[in-house]
Image (cartoon, rainbow, N blue to C red; front, side, top):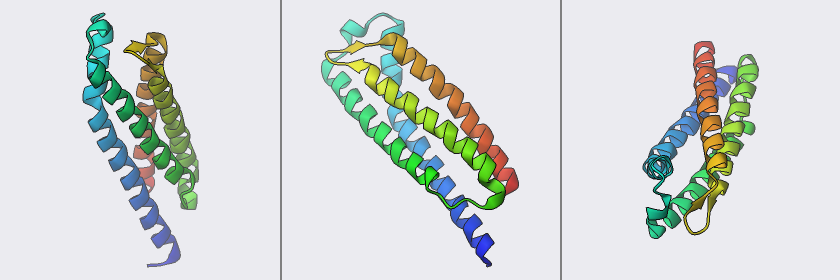
Length: 144
């Protein structure tokens, strides 16, 4: 393998690792997110178990730290020249996704209080950026 092929192989492995870890983190956090979403939507936040809420807060913080680590991998990656543009778009969307995760985590106040406007806004941004990330990954996969 020549130098460019090796760089492309390492890049592909890094992207695969980032996406795999992102998806597994999301899958782990989704049940807790759904529980919060249901409590907000049904106006039953006052009935939410305090221990479960505290665990959710801790898990969201840990998940956000994982996403930040993955973003750092994207931002410091050695990117093949033909992928630089799409990679920058991908990294930018991932950064906005991470920022929205931070905002959602920060919307969880003490004693089962949630800034629902901030929570909802963060969810919307996460959904939008996830769609963009998927689009940029598809473009990158075509070029690889």
